[in-house]
Length: 121
Length: 121
DNA sequence: TCGTTATCAGTAATGATTACTATTATTATA
DNA sequence: TATAATAATAGTAATCATTACTGATAACGA
Image 1 (cartoon, each protein chain N blue to C red):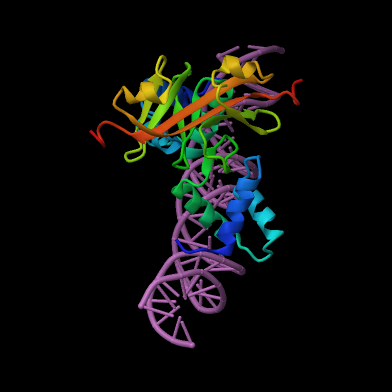
Image 2 (cartoon, each protein chain N blue to C red):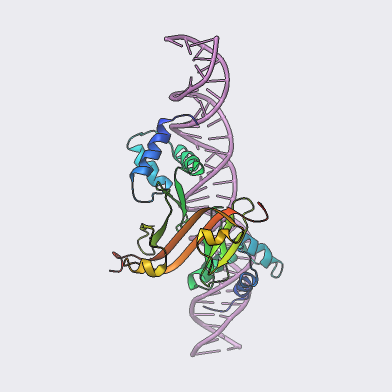
């Protein structure tokens, strides 16, 4: 993978913020530095970075992918009303423990990805 | 909410299978019983049923919503290669415990939904 | 039975994401 | 350092899951 100014910028933007931006949020942020960067470039690089494991994707219920520059193992809390995404670092994994943070949990989606027995017996 | 033959059929289909079908899988399944049912009707009712809490949505990495007729609290394992979705009922929640089932976990997305402190202080 | 209106079938529109293409920029090598 | 090979880009068109729209139909309370 060759160096590119645009990819470095995109990486810096994601790694430098503690929210969990969507592609278009990153796009607008990038245009402040690189006014001609294209949305396609943002999408292509986000996919690349996610494939490389440099960033993480978050499949939420708002139909847009969110990206997380922090690849350490942690969970997320999303507010039903304002949509804010809060990092939940360990130890804080059960709904009861999350409630203790002042967050009222109404739903939970926990998906593990990996290799199943049939594909990799 | 009025009764409708179409909605009952859709509900029966989801509740009657143990996989986690997408809208178009449910659509094709429904057409075998109700040949004129429309895709829009399937989508509208799936959304309704999910809003009512009768079924659950699964936001996966394949860009399509999957639906689960089992609303009891459980997690999911998705194979990176074949895409198969496996239910993980408690107790089986940590990656280590899942590995013991013969599934090799490579990634994890755990999202809690609820009300945050600012919105519902 | 009748009137109200939720629901439907069929189709058009939406919107996030991806693909395409001519051009530009990176980088290995002479 | 100049140059050739080719990744990467900007800009735009296409894709595709999902949602919205519209006139017709069906559920159901009075």
